[in-house]
Image (cartoon, rainbow, N blue to C red):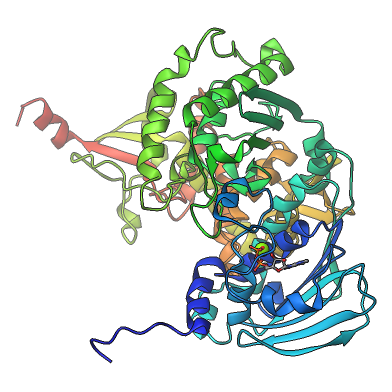
Amino acid sequence: MPGRIVVLPETLTNRIAAGEVVDRPASILKELMENALDAGATEIAVDLERGGCESIRVTDNGEGILREDVPLAFARYATSKIGAFEDIYRVHSFGFRGEALPSIASISRIEMTTRRASSPAGTRAIIEAGEVKELTDAGCPVGTSLLVSRIFEPVPVRRKFLKSDMTEQGYCLDVVTRLALMQPAVKIRVSAGVKMILNIPAVQDLAERIALTLGQDFRRQLIPVAGEIPGVRLRGFVSRPEFTRSSAAQIYLYVNGRFIKDYLLNHAVMTVYRRLTEPRRYPAAVLGLEITPEDVDVNVHPAKMEVRFRNPREIYSLIVEALGGAIGAGITPAAGAFKGPPGGGPAAYASRIEEALKRYRVASGPQKLLFGGLTGEKSGAPAVPPALHFSEPVGEPGRRDERRRFSDLHYIGQTAGTYLIFSGETGITLVDQHAAHERILFEKLLGQAQGEKAVGQRLLLPEVVSLPPREYHFLMETLPILEEAGIEAEPFGGDSIVIKAIPALLSHTEARTLILDLLADCAEASRDLPLNERREKIFTSLACRGAVKANRDLTGGEVTGLCRDLDAIPHAFTCPHGRPLAVSISLYELEKMFKRR
Ligand code: ADP
Ligand code: MG
């Protein structure tokens, strides 16, 4: 119909809107749980079939919906939470657009039962293709229960974007975790079919909830944080600087109770920890900001994970000062040289804040926010190594015979605490000690996995570690691979596991840190991979964690051992991440550099 302008039928516009709000089962779950919380529920039960891909049921004991309001709940822009436009700026509830239910209903089938305390009878409703098909009496307890099934059936292409059931379940658990952290008084249960996968009792305070949700290990590491400026109140907990993780995934930020992702706030948190922790280590944090609704725009995107502050600079300073103060008070002098931001003003971090704000403005443009930076700082994709035009690989696959043997080289010394310098008949060779050791460990782990039995070193004292739910599930699922590497772990009740053995090759590392780092490296990155493909990621992580670090002097014996090992393995060219482990400069190249040729 070229040239004709038509108004889209509502079912279609709902479906388009659905694309914005509900892109996977986890986003459906988020909307349903938020509705339950808005309804004042103190108990929420979630049931996920096939990770939420098959069906999602959310049952709450909230206020329920009146029979005559049920059709309205599924109509576009129908909400009980806002009356006038100005109210948009005052909303304290999660929902306010009245978009979620119609959007969800447009791409699934919904069965609902609901009852208000004042109504003697409950209501049962069936909504198909966005329309209420059935509205009958039903006996049911006060509250609301929604069963969403046939998810994305009308939009098959959406289904194609879904990942494995396990992965989708992981996203769902993320949603639950984020909501649970800020709602200590609400009891939350999650089951997958007959299996109970999460059971979080109602508790009095946030610290308790953090421990129950993120793992008891957190409890001992928490430092309370509080701060205030006009119109903004900061409350929460951060971890001691000694308790770091290798990704920023455990930094949970909330604005007016809503989980958000915000580059600026992350940056402020890291400004404090940067001086206290090693590079690329991140604290855990659960921080909530209460901001006068007029001073923050949560309406940036329907999925509402992004916000815009009216006074970002002040909020940044508030975080830096409150965290700095709290941590400064909470750490022993030996743990770091933190002096806190200079009392009077933000002089010390002025340049950092300017840089962050600049980035914030760019990022807050019409495009999506860039959260990259801090969270993406992890090793990431192995960048193409800077071209050393005069260097060549020590050998190439397939030319192994001609490869010079590291053991034949003469060791001269170490430079920059990292590179081993060797002299040989044909020139000089530089070896990156960490990359080399990483490759060696990787090949050995792989060799053991393919061979008879991995050599695990039993721990004298088994270590009990409690884990956030999704990491727990990832670990359980991945146990067979861990066993290949010599790691023995078992469920220990609740969210805990007990580690009984770690790879003998890595016996110099601390079991707890090894496992936590492994999870941080892999739980996110490889949960989409089938089990056998996770192996490489996991072994790479183990090798990296176990390998000798940069900035460590190696003894002569260690260097000899390293060379011997390098000669014994098949792929002595790159580390498992793909960076070169050695470069050579030939005599010819040396002579050219010195203009002898
Ligand atoms: P919003 O949450 O933005 O108002 P929704 O589409 O999510 O929009 O929900 C529409 C309306 O349906 C809500 O305003 C609320 O009145 C009602 N509703 C939805 N879920 C529940 C629930 N679990 N308990 C009580 N009322 C609910
Ligand atoms: Mg809602």
